[in-house]
Image (cartoon, rainbow, N blue to C red):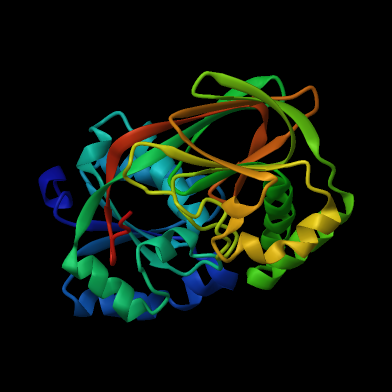
Length: 317
């Protein structure tokens, strides 16, 4: 098959382990529904972490310009990174769609992409597209500086500790929203706030940080709303900083992590910006789209209107 014909076809990248192996168990159903909607596609199954990045780069080289992710937010993150690491075409030539089988579905929730496969595939068939910003985080892994793109939300501090615990359990075959919530409560028992220097669009401050969320999207952790006003196409990052809150105060206020009122709390600050830098004498760990990364010093920036996504419902201000 030549490159030009590949441009009309979808590449489907399936994470068979996503959602307690739902990617593998439900693939025949998903495949039949794609065929029923007369969507032309080829398929690749990932076998290890990071492989979706490579598959995406290889597909773009082979001429594919339309990619469907069958998996969770982590698989989607890998596909996005594969798009931005490709050397064959501008990122704006690529369109991304999602059939969610993961446990969180946080990015899909923002665009009305349901867990019902039939409905999710009808959205792909209708092919309504919009331009989407993409975030970039630089961080350190030991002495080595690295970068990672993210499409939804990145975090520092407590959030990354919970993500790290959850990912260890996912690797052992245990996942789900309750696992995330359990890890949230368990992490609270030992977590301590960290003094950090934060520079937002050039303005410096010092904070006793519990957590920092940097959002291009609104949802994380299976429905938490830590950056509740974020827009994926405004060219800005939404930043939520939880300052100096003790563990019992956090427990008393758990509901505000979910109900969209988090920015009303007096110890929680919200910003919109294009760049944020965080450094500390102590190590603060980072994550992006639920993928554990390295640690501070870290810098977050935004690449506006840099990829096309297929959506069900569009967020408006």
